[in-house]
Image (cartoon, rainbow, N blue to C red; front, side):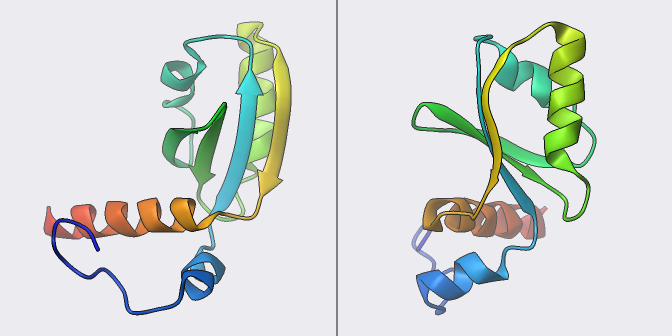
Length: 104
């Protein structure tokens, strides 16, 4: 549910399995890295997830390499960077973003 509306009747696992985008987990030394990364090509969304950032890229774009190259050029050290299976929270946030975009 979001804003009093049911977004989907599917199971949490089904919502996760439907996500085709690349979900990347990042920990980097720079405090403003989120703002810097918002300009990356193919990036659909970026948000904090505990101590990490989750970046959602279009499927097949190679998000990890894009991040590595961009942060290297900025001189920002990466502590952890890996592609992950989306969590239920990732899938839920993507579903909300799709609903909001459909209203525009």
